[in-house]
Image 1 (tube, rainbow, N blue to C red):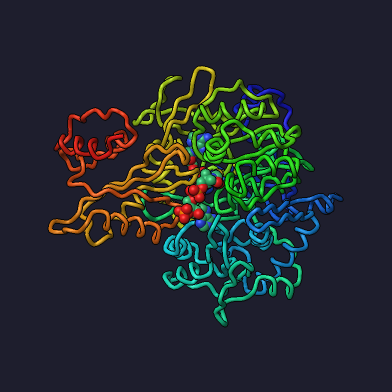
Image 2: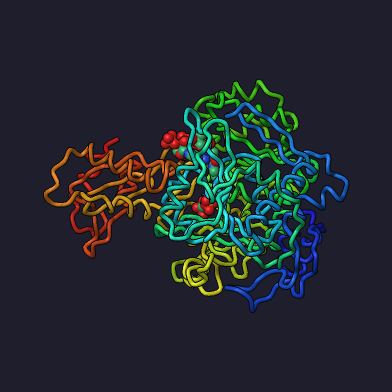
Length: 628
Ligand code: COA
Ligand code: AMP
């Protein structure tokens, strides 16, 4: 769709005339009604794209490919080493199942604008349910299976779903995670109750059903009449995806239909170099934005074959699992998190497994979710002999902010850099007063408004929160919350968050929410949680607590209660396994806990004593405690 043949030409074409650029990219989407305005600055927090246009996202993902004669092409390959199954679903199969699931949801009263919470593992029915919700013009909200009941309850309460769709269980290595009791507990905790729960029974752990509320997934689908697509406005929400914010309350990032379809359709080719009929694999989870954009919507919008993998990079059965999947299904491109590569590297540093498989059709590895540490990037590059591209984005944007672009020719490999801004983002580093910084200077990575299509236009029922979180600090700009440098050649180096968000195995978590949990323990007077460096997961949380005066219990006992409490309230995904009891926390004279100093000590770095410190001995004590 684009005339641009090189990155610079394309980027400048966009910069000169963003509306013309997006109007052209929008030709890749089938619209029920064309837009009144490409961009309407009067709408929403900073304007909205494709105002007045109508479409259906599910139609664009499924029906139009079948209508174009590609019904027999495989749309989804379900590859599950956890169950020993591999299943292929053609576009025609996916359409039939989605039409029926949409009919089933409609029969349960779901219509345009209603919310459907999806709490499911990596099974094809999760993708079918997302698409069925989109087909009805409803709004889905997928919750990752590794969250605890309390986190699920917060999301249910905020999204107020009419129906929740779940599976009886998820499968983790060595353990069956029973989803249904977690969901029942979450619904009990939530003030909002769904009218129905649709349960996919998996043989590994059948769920007990609650009469009058719970219905069986397969039974309702079998009984349903196929449902046609309901057109929605381009600016209507397609989904809400909750992500960690700086407080314990997660943020419901809203994604609209039109801009989302345009940018995902475009990015599959422009960034990843994958087109209709080609096989693409994103090893993530449908519970994360990466799964939404690049397991389900992006590849299906483009007409690709998408692999849905229920397994791990190692242990299912070994460190060759990823290379087996790529080779067996002939995937051209793999997108995963650096932590997955680190896990493989730890177990198979010499790449013996990779050499057992024919990877000749494999063309590139894309990494995101956290910064790829250079040794891992270099290792993967040397092992595969193929481009390794780190690219940076976040739940809020829904698609990459910076990347390497296979359509334009990749940039020279610079391990540690996240590539250059995608057309659509006018990215700069700003100082803390919002002033532009010169190239090569580290600052707050921020985009000039408006954000491009596809980026979250608001937070669910919380436009003020959106403004506060992202666009009011630096008027006219969107603040990403990441710090970094843009070098002389335009390559972007993302160095870390400016808030309390940490990245554990590519999973975004808030240390603030973990502190809230620790502080709720009856014996804890005050606490701090930091993200310490971890060879496998990038970061892992570490908690430090001061006990209330007079509490005289064994420290190990309190610590294990704290670990259990975080697992119970936030979930196993928090990977909170290290709590330490300390006599005092290092603080400034004004009482602010010196978390950055604690983190440096935990990482074995030298931590200069801040001039504002109240009690330098507290830092010294921590150094002794954490001596490496
Ligand atoms: N449902 C229930 N529990 C889950 C879960 C899910 N969908 N996903 C993870 N968990 C659990 C794990 O079983 C683990 O529990 P444990 O404490 O009992 O062992 C815990 O949450 C932490 O999981 P994780 O951080 O994934 O660690 P791990 O040690 O199980 O695996 C990796 C480490 C690197 C192999 C794994 O993180 C991985 O495959 N990462 C791939 C990258 C990825 O998917 N990133 C997402 C964003 S792109
Ligand atoms: P999430 O919203 O879960 O996708 O997490 C987004 C955050 O992860 C970003 O704000 C970054 O802090 C971090 N992140 C994601 N991808 C990268 C990357 N390629 N390089 C550096 N940080 C990244």
